[in-house]
Amino acid sequence: MSDEIIRLENISKDFNGVQVLKDISLYILRNEFLTLLGPSGCGKTTTLRIIGGFECPSSGNVLFEGSRINDLPAFKRKVNPVFQKYALFTHMNVYENIAFGLKIKKISKKDIDKKVQEVLELVNLPGIENRSVDSLSGGQQQRVAIARAIVNEPEVLLLDEPLGALDLKLRKDMQIELKNIQKRLGITFIYVTHDQEEALTMSDTIVVMNHGSIQQIGTPLDIYNEPKNAFVADFIGESNIIDGTMIEDCLIEFAGHRFECVDKGFERNEEVDVVIRPEDVKLGRVEEGMLEGTVQSVVFKGVHYEMIVLSNQKKWIIHSTAMEPVNSKVGIKILPTDIHIMKKVRVQ
Image (cartoon, rainbow, N blue to C red; front, side, top):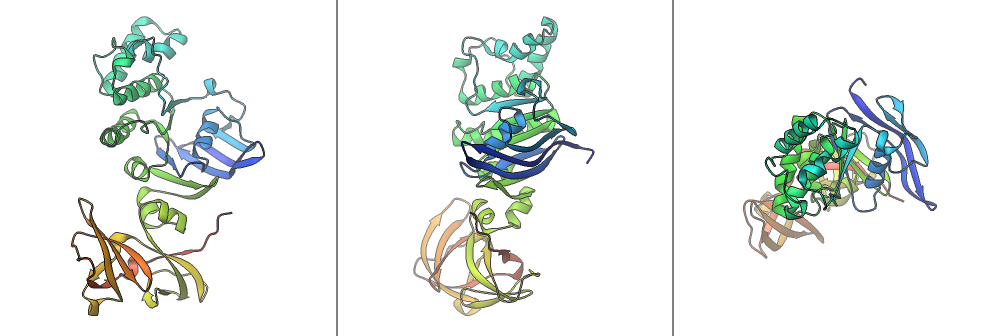
């Protein structure tokens, strides 16, 4: 693929006999914002460190623009990292921190001055070059760390949970800012996070990982609307996950009722996982519902109500802008297109 910049081929990694990556394969496109997403210990940071040259794979190949770089040291790779702990030099001011890598390259003072000013403008921090980094807020320090990385004009920026130390509002603001910076720079961002909202907000492509394996690769819309298995469905947003039986193509049985669906290609009477998003469950009058339930709790979430409805011993999570009172009887309706069927996958 002509716009491919990085490819991982069958990457595995062991630490003291414990396998933390299991035959990982994926490609990353030029100018793409790709996010490695998963719970703690899933292998996402190890994958990033292998791309950056800070770890060597136990097996498999790392390719950069088609060339194998397994043995190429980190400082010779066309990538720059930004970590959660920004690792700024506290004895240097902002200018000196950003200019550090350029001075090592023996770039002229005039060119360094120009580049530092350009990146400060890019990260919306003009005029602070003479300030001590200790005097900056967490968000400002994070931007300086990004400026220090991008001033070297890397082809790939590696970001390992860089927003994790920020408060919620600043983190949300910086999500948008980071995406804007990536678009303006036109370089590849490889981002590591365990925050699903962060991944959905910023990414062109999301790689969902668990237990050292890739569970699914896709756009945020694909990952959310068409999860490949119950783990992905449960990890990306909230889901109702129910045991079901695929009676035949487009006919599923779960919760004591048969429903029309749009899925095909399963064995007759195959045991499956049924995934239904809380916002896709509709409540109404009992006589209009496919299932009958009782509202157990109601919580106002700002833009919607979250209700827990008990039906046939199953607790349903339901999101709606219309609130049904606690203890009221309701009918549950689900459209065929909102029922997602997937094969049962047992993670070892």
